[in-house]
Image 1 (cartoon, one colour):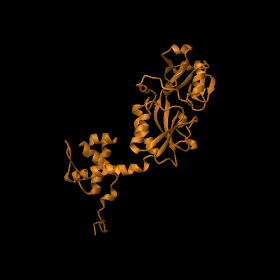
Image 2 (cartoon, one colour):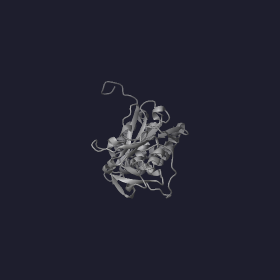
Image 3 (cartoon, one colour):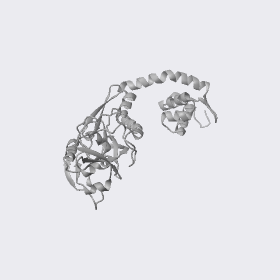
Image 4 (tube, rainbow, N blue to C red):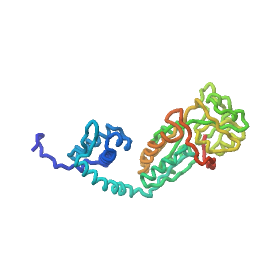
Length: 326
């Protein structure tokens, strides 16, 4: 009997051990300290410290000798490290095997942001699954119709959609699209408020710019509407009005259209969305990869003053895809 009036339970440390404990331990063992290990795992150092301490308590053994100047493995810690060095890679391989070759459909409306391929490549490398791109000329990129498993959406309306779990990844800056014969085409920068004096070409299907973004007392008039980016670009080239779109629209080159930088324009939220229920088993994993990789590397920060667009190393203008934008 123990002091609490019951028979002592048999020790079963394995039952309380999780993969996160083992990965945390190995990171500290490999890096020789908690600071670099926390950076490698992308978690806070206090969280890592608690995780390793929890593992030690569960196993009933001290794994590290800690001083103010160094962290060293104990004999028990060295034995565990040597065993896990062989076991963890095999376990990772076994856990990845079921999803190897799985297909995840990624929906988008007109084009993905600059640098987005990095997200898909990282996800495929980490899971062994494949990503299939699905473009739909629909406000929700077909995720509401079951055409895709994960969707990249733009605009404030995408941030709170019933039936979808969404996360705003970053904000893209807007540019103005003007006809090459327009007086605006000679400008290097335009102010957002100036566009209120010019007729607007609006993509009504998947666009992100409408007159109600301007103050009610001074809004541009809609001269022309379009259902996809090709119609939108052609209408601007024909001189029907000015268009406004996220900066990624620069990929849609046209000899009759010039894109001009905008200042003081509201940024466009870029949103990752998955079904709130019944989602693909890998959908949340893809969304987590997108959140981890987008903000530092894609074309803009999380608020209205984005960084520069990723450079095009080839120097060539990409082919115009079909789709819808503005």
